[in-house]
Length: 99
Image (cartoon, rainbow, N blue to C red):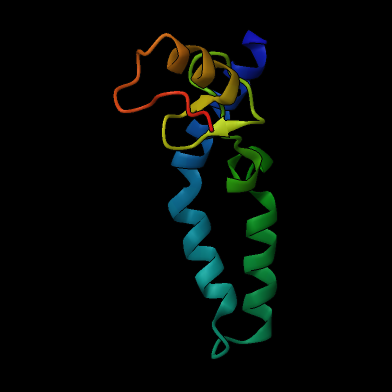
């Protein structure tokens, strides 16, 4: 589990280092006033960037367990940890509701 979290950290670092270059290349690619040959060169340049520098390769994970699914985005933790902490009343303003 630790190795998966480390891999995700490395992906985030790559994303930060290549983000400006990727955005610039995509803007050039979307412009219609440039010739078609330039679009092909930009496409090749985009393909040469590392795969892990893409935004879609990064997963949002629980900061405690590293779990991907069932993450409560307001607290950045998984639903399981959220429930444990809420039942202990360690989160201000959160209480178990019943009806």
